[in-house]
Every structure is written in structure tokens, then in C-alpha cells.
Length: 251
Ligand code: FPP
Image 1: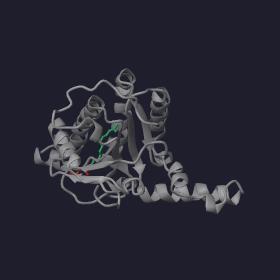
Image 2: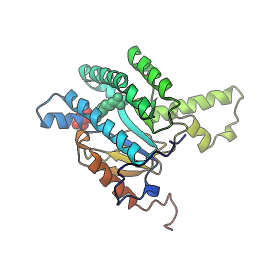
Image 3: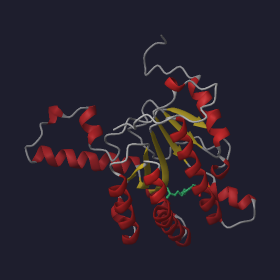
């Protein structure tokens, strides 16, 4: 499902509305470094990172971008110090509780992608509540990748498909890209056109491996808490200058 067109606000004159990405994915990197540069504990960077994400979501809504997916916690992030992991889980829960009203007002449809079974029960409850309450909203689709790993997502899709074949509900020759996509956490959302990664790392870190097949990648040295509207604008200008060929020749 793609978002209903909203009233566009403040679209910069050098951006062409019809050539905006339909789906933007972000790897929000650099929170820890941002905090360290200021002599603050790492968790302060994550706290500031939430404000950046909220502003990006508003900006996507204002400029008519239908879907935003943010990488909040990877399957590898459990390896961080327990204190930081606990802080992040509590932060996700608190933000969800605090922001539900605004998400309803702004018609945001939130969805969590990843293996949610390992998350604390109280966070899972808040996730389920926010997804259920916003499910009929008609605005931007906001996906939060939490305990998410691209390989793990592909493996769980394979298992689900194999089970259907075993049960005789599906023939192996019916398996194609469209069917496979329907078994991913992101089913129903167009693949990202643009991946933005902050803080300069040149990796995709197990994020949306299948979905990113033709995404344009934009990497900035800016640390996530400093990624603002002006930076997003720059990323979109750069995106609009790309020649997206999807393996074909230029027109
Ligand atoms: C990466 O920076 C950031 C994270 C692992 C956490 C990102 C989470 C948020 C911004 C909160 C989002 C909240 C909701 C509810 C969606 P890093 O810690 O790897 O930074 P570093 O590379 O500088 O150490």
C-alpha cells in the first residue's frame, strides 16, 4: 500500500515532485560518535537521534514521500553493552507511547519489521498497540527495523515458503520474485529507491538485502543527530541527478 498524496508543504524549488523517491531507507549511524565528540554518554546520541528521525518523518510527509524505513536495531546490536541495549529498548517503548497521538493526527502508519519475538514483552505490547491503532491511517508508511537482519529475513521467508510446499499448498515452480517478496517483513511496500547512510561508512550492514537490489545509495559524513532537512534536501538533489537504469541502457 502506498500513501495517499498529501498536501505538499515547502518542497524546495530545485526538487521535482514527480522524481522524488517513493520510499527512503535510512541507516542512522553515528549517534555514539556525536555524543563522544561532546563528552556525553553514547545514550545521549541515541536520544538526539530520535529527534532527527521525527524531523525526517515530518519532512517526508511534507514533501510527499510515501514510505520511510529506519534501521533502529540490528540482529547484531545485541552484542553491545547490556546497559546500551536496555537503554535502546526503553527508549523505543517510551517514544512509541509518547508519539502515538501525533502519529494518529498525522495519519502515520507505523510498522515494525524484524524478529520481534526476542524483544522485551512490554515493548512488544507497545509495538502491537501502535501498529494496530495506526493500521488504517492513510498517510506515510513508517517502518522501523528492530531486531532486523536481512539474511535472517530471507531465511524466514524461505522457511515459510518451504512449509507451504511441504504441505502441498504451493508448487516449487510457483515461486518467483513477487511471491518471495510477499513473504518478507516488508511485504506490501515498494522497494526503497534511496538508501541514506550517515557517518560515512560505506556498508549496507545486512539491511534490506533483497529490497535494496536497485536502490540508489547516498552516504554522507554527517553524523545522524546532525542530519537535518538541509542534508535531506542535498541527498534528494543528488538522487534526482542519478540516471536510474535498472540494468538497462540510458533512455
Ligand atoms: C547507530 O549509531 C544507531 C543505533 C544503533 C540506534 C538508532 C536508534 C534511534 C535513533 C532511536 C529510534 C527510535 C525509534 C522509536 C524508532 P551508533 O550507536 O552505531 O553510533 P556510532 O557508530 O557513532 O557508535
